[in-house]
Length: 77
Image (cartoon, rainbow, N blue to C red; front, top):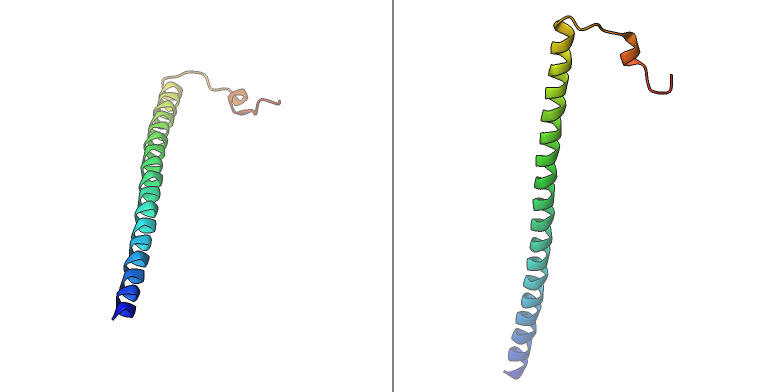
């Protein structure tokens, strides 16, 4: 009978160890998910700003603002 108690004790300890590892992993994944969500929100905001800037640029060209091919040249020219 003592052998069975020792075996059960070892199994319970192993399960507790596995549970602790899973909880730690879950906390790490949750933190990574939260960070990714913040980054996604930041990237969305940047895309919105770029889209607004592009629409302003297109509107200014449609309004008769002179277009110069120089605006398209890379800075090293």
